[in-house]
Image (cartoon, rainbow, N blue to C red; front, top):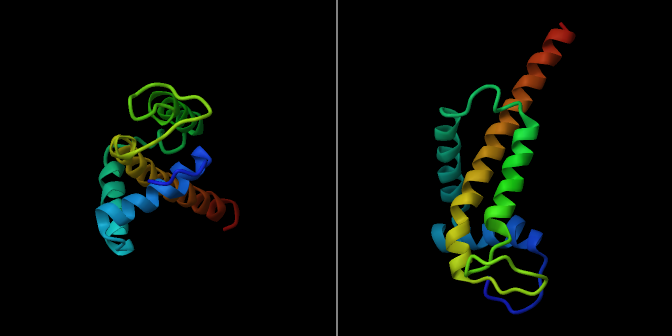
Length: 125
């Protein structure tokens, strides 16, 4: 997060910020971070409607909304261009979204696998 080398924004969100969160907030303890995310996922599952777990277009719209409202905004909440610096303010603003999206992804993957298992058992008795 504190490097000065150019880096792809996808790498920042898919790897660097998750790794930074793990080190900064969970002292690099993967089990503690997993337990936290699992708890978050289980609490979210209480509020997710069955239709929400199947609505892929809604998931894509959520991602697009997050990108436009948060991902492409710099530390000063300004849209950045091809050259930008991201610091602690960006991370602090973004980590709740990262945790939420990881937990949602886990819940949605579990729902999809459960649905596929049920559909498979119906079609292959």
